[in-house]
Image (cartoon, rainbow, N blue to C red; front, side):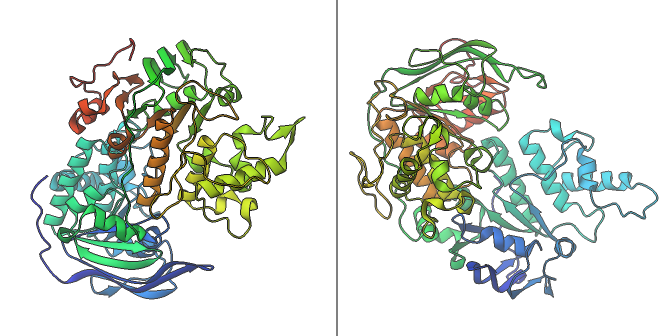
Length: 568
């Protein structure tokens, strides 16, 4: 990354004064005041629910503040008007891209800029502006390329170009808001982004950088603003901060790293041999003759850019899809492609999208707590749900996994009312706490748990020490965790990591699918990489480097990452 150039002017290009926003009784922003200098990178940190999204939504005109004022380049910014924010030179690159996949790069940049009364297209002028801006900031993308065929890194360049290109408005962005910009990038693509940021600030642009990755925040930012519970609790130079300090500022307490226990892997729990999965609308196999083995007491991590077959692998390992070729066994037995059979065999899952497939938001917490086990004798009899048993189990789960947000209505609380972190705790508890909790029993921590500083007891899940699945009424033999900490703040991430490591130490086999390489290196015993439905050999985590993983994620093959269709 080129050498960082400090801000060239102390004068503020953006000033927020006393910004407050309430949603009913919830105070999302509480009298927040911030400023941003020309050529400065200001990092915005905070837990989920701290108020970051609300604040930048107010800044970009999506929300109207209840109190406070915003000035951009010395002029008042009209509230609740995204067009006014764009005209003032404020651009935003969202975490989830807002591109039209079936259009070209040029068409995406022009989208929304052509006035209805314009009789002739201005594609020539737009193309020239796109090429010139791309060359100026090192963001070159072929204007006629179809967005659907671009890599994730190239799509992000298009998003940034949309903000920077001045075609169709008075000026391009002079203030750029980047929301989790490296969440889905390879290490090499992240490096390219950082080089672009350095060039942007060298040209005098100012950047608000939102990220949960503290290493990146410390690397790219000049100043750091930390929000907690809707309030600004600290603003400090990046040079005076470290990861431990920032983590404590974000959550209000020290966040200890996840503790690993030394243990040897046990017997093979899950084995794939030349597994192939086809899809009619896909040009290549979704899973292309992949092989892997997973043993009790180990974490096998699968890295890769989204959309390369990881979700299909997770679905196959949970019984949602039948293979078109190859074999799959759990504890030596082939199981039918029927999810209930896999649940009974001791396979637990943490799905990627907690809102879409993890929970049913309109159902109460107690129903979601036993959602995958309604058909078992523990929670149903003659096809009728045993409500008392299910609710007792849910209360025990809430206690053990510190699921907050149910204080008013208890287990009858609609699940959609939970925050993302607490929703994930509910899903995690459902996966790990498979032993039914009888009505009237105390919700004490199970044997082997111990208190952690500033948090609930750590749950020892009591897996049969690698001796195989006990099914419902025992504990999971195999945990398929697909993006288990996606969108969670640092405190919730640490909690989820510790629970997975504790389950692994108790004998569970954990398949971790993640796009967060820091998470992978923190948890994995072995690592493999998926690209275009193929899987590299699973190697010990210590044999991998970030560069090697990044190369394998883009289809290159490093020395330690040879693709194999044989035993992993």
